[in-house]
Image (cartoon, rainbow, N blue to C red; front, side, top):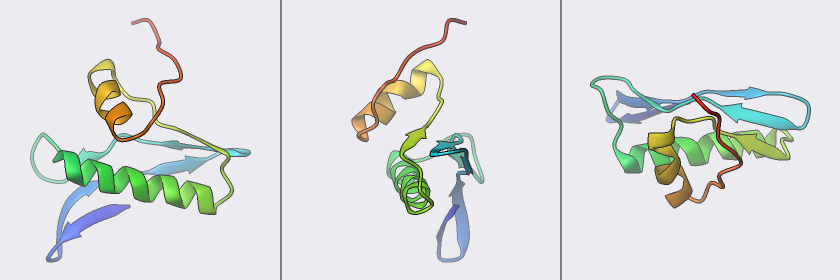
Length: 84
């Protein structure tokens, strides 16, 4: 999934499917190092919608600890943490 503005790509994200679940990859900027928070929210919402339409009961978004609070602010639920 790609977010564009006036035919200029801004950010991208991916989704992979399993049996009844989906995993969304991190949202990445097309140019530059960071993705605007509103762009990230749009990409994540679209990926989650796609997962739901394809039959996923659960959608996972593995992210680093720095992004976890941001994802929670967008409505995601923290399911767990991995030790480094």
